[in-house]
Length: 346
Length: 256
Figure 1 (cartoon, each protein chain N blue to C red):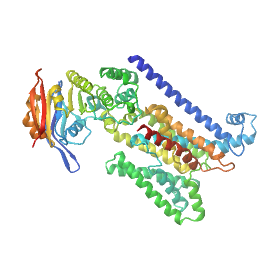
Figure 2: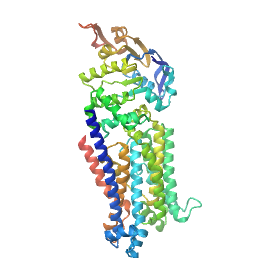
Figure 3: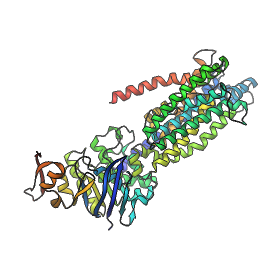
Figure 4: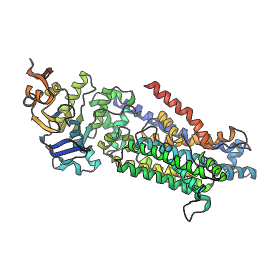
């Protein structure tokens, strides 16, 4: 019986690994769709030819693909990946399925940072003006998570304490943001409102490069901690008794989460639900063995954001909707279905 | 054989003293010790302190090794802890949850881990649950999985917090018989039990706590007396031997 059960377990793991590959292929196809979609619709053949450097591609098409659409599509993909991976890790270390960068005030803090740059003109010194809003947002988001960890440690560091501080922080940042909106000039207010809706309109290769580096640096550490994070699903005490240094695991994981979410939000503005929906869908697909759960969350987030990027262009023809609005609109039905599914199970 | 020594242990939750200056006679390898006492006597707290899950002052050592000084991953090889229950909302399957108990602390490669985990699940009679999700198991089944997680690292000290609380009668007997076998293999086994009938039948030694202090310690027939039950639990009780000569505890009434 033992061998038969282990064979079934191995088959199950192969299916999960195949699902990871399928999600990666779907995310790649979603990017392709994103590249084809826009005011000038591009045929699939031309798009692929432009991507692969084909010689018979019209120059205009190559410019549209490489210089206009690919930075946007790549940034959407990476932001989705970063936020969903951050959400997945956050949910595990805070032992709460509702934890994500958005609910813990990271986005609100980033928005407050952006507002201080846009409204007050306070920026990080020695940085080019073009980066000032993102840099401020990054500093505030990272600062918020740092403050959260510090407060949590002073108070004993349990997940409940961190979540409560996160909610308080979120409200505090939102109130200060309202204050800045109140005193902002009409121009600054418009810029700020647009930023808080989340937008890929300002995507450029530099942003893509920054986020790609952050992901490449953090994701391997996430995967290395996969068994420890899996153990934490049995509760902090159990994980401790298995030999996991839970406090250190939480600290390092929240550092990764901080870098991922602060970078993503600072580059594109407030994006809701990806950090929540990505991990939930991944959990339904592959369960909670973090060797599969983390990559599937990452890819699900990438897929959602990529599809949202396409939808943002086609929902109202001729208008590019802020992508934060679209992800929230996709996220809401998923969220409600999860609530009702949970309710039915109880 | 190396036993467990508990010397002058104090545990506080905030300003409240839960365990005060508690020292126990050495608890030997090869024996099953039951921690007994009324609610809030400090049984689970003492167990958690021994498992290094609750902060304490004092010294808790297994043989010559002070458990507080061992790094977490080395301690995990020495100490196995079974909590009262596992989270019910996890989509992990039983097999991977027990593999995680083995691999999270960095022991063994994946293939060795899988075969060792299956051997433990078979030993406990729950191999058929290997591919079930934790959220689909009954409370009793989860408790057996929790035991598997505690023993899979082959610890020398095994700590169990009310291990039979969710088990049916047959599984209670199976678990307690298994504890005796685990002790006979040279382990120190300590379990918190509320059922003194089970304690009388299965324990080599009973340690009775009251208000965070040691009230009594010794073989069941020494410790389980009507006087102790009246004083510590506030009940009128008889302690008699059944037709098979086994010690039986019968509770008649709450003491007036």
